[in-house]
Every structure is written in C-alpha cells, then in structure tokens.
Image (cartoon, rainbow, N blue to C red; front, side):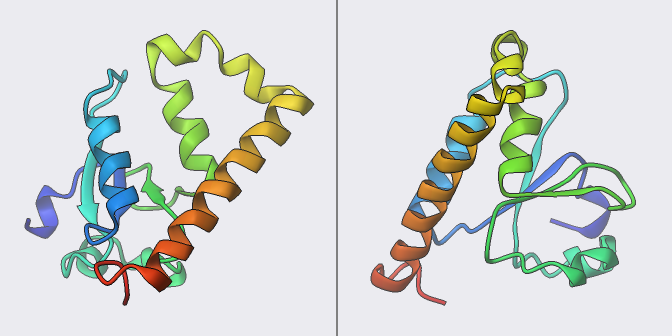
Length: 129
C-alpha cells in the first residue's frame, strides 16, 4: 500500500496478533458513518505519510489516525469510543459510555483485552516481536 493510499480514519493494527486480526475482521463487518481503513502498524509508508506517528508507541495499543495530517491520533480506549460514536447502531447506546459507571466498565474491559493481547505477544510464536 503506497503512502498516498493511506486514507483516514485509519486503524493501525498488528497483523501477526490473532486478537488484533479478529478485531479488524469484526470492524470490517460493521457499518460506520465513515469509511475506516486499516494498515499494519509496521507499514513502511506510515512515517512518510504521517511523520507525527513517530511520537507514538504503535506496538503497545491500537491507534487510529483521525485526520489527513495525523494531528489527531486516538489511542487505546479512545479508539473504541470513536468506533461506538461512528457506528449508527452502537451510537444509540453511546451515552452509556459517558456515564461514570460506563466509563469505568469501558476502561476495565479495554485494559483486560489489552492485557490479554500483551500476554499473547509473550507466549504466542506468531505474536512475538
């Protein structure tokens, strides 16, 4: 994929991680009010297209480049919130995430999934970097 074909919003994912691949596949089957693109976080064209991404640890958490200049980059839980707010069916329940209890539940869920992903990276031969 060339640098100019990297369109936003753009989710950066780890193609060697089974959990990340399943997340990508699930998102691809959902409807959103914007076209979401995907690219591996190790795509060699990323630094050329989005120089600001050098400031991020792309292998640590999911990242979403929101705008063409990468002025807005969402990380971790922020990506999930973006996806919920841009999915017409899920958006009806987005207000739950804005409550204190919803925010805590979202935080706990994301941290648990990310901990599982990190565990896979250390124990899965496909995920080790």
